[in-house]
Image (cartoon, rainbow, N blue to C red; front, side, top):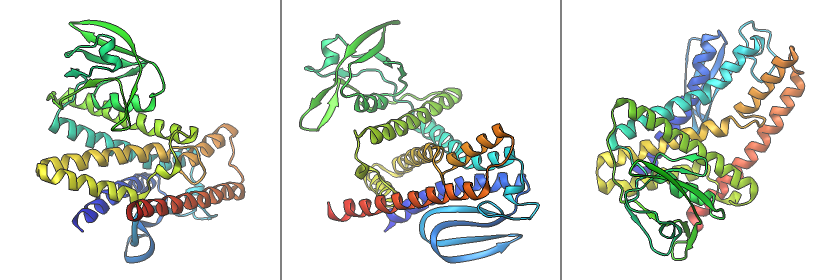
Length: 346
């Protein structure tokens, strides 16, 4: 029960931080916010402060900042649809931006506390491409193709997404940089593709500025893996059944807690913060996809409006968002059903 509660708290915090971005900027732009709620479904608790009704919903997934004139016509001078396009753009962009800031801060905290797992090779496995190309312990991996590597854990992710490719690997040895070409090979007992470089999990502590830099590099890694996962989904490398929604995310958070608790409280906190950073970075990317009903879809329409110099037809815009919302809700239901099947019947 405790791990479920922790999962709900983390997931809810990420969502509410996103919605607070919309809320704060809406207030700064003098837009009337009618409701601010956390969760979905029937209302459990609510109170009103000023002009805004704050609600806690039954299902601990999602949330919303409901603004006057956002999805319907309104003659109120403080309505969302009465504001200039640049203000509406800022209000919508503030949600993903808040998640970006949250993820960056969490990455910094984890890096500053745990340290940096630099991609310096500890050992090389015989029978794999790295050994054949002369890679040695002590070599630092700098690039994989054109991808700049900062952490050892980035290498396995890059290999996963390029397991059928020949990869140009640039490494540094005694101050000199060299490049070789490595080909991932399947390790049959694990089902993973490897190039044969290994790390023992050593971490180096950095100073304040190094921690900021490597925190942003970790953000880059999370955003990269999110984009590559979406690309793999579109190209069929990954099945839609492998996607996880809120139920699956809660399970992942709970599993992370269970695996970490034997290592002590600090390990639990750091692993959960790291996962929260990953989820927040994922939310940035997913929300900025140029699809109807998502923040990215709205931003695209605002850009079109700014270029045209006049508003789109509100009825057409409303229909676009409605269709997008229906499709999005259908996808969420499918993913939630799939999560439940994986948890209870697999």
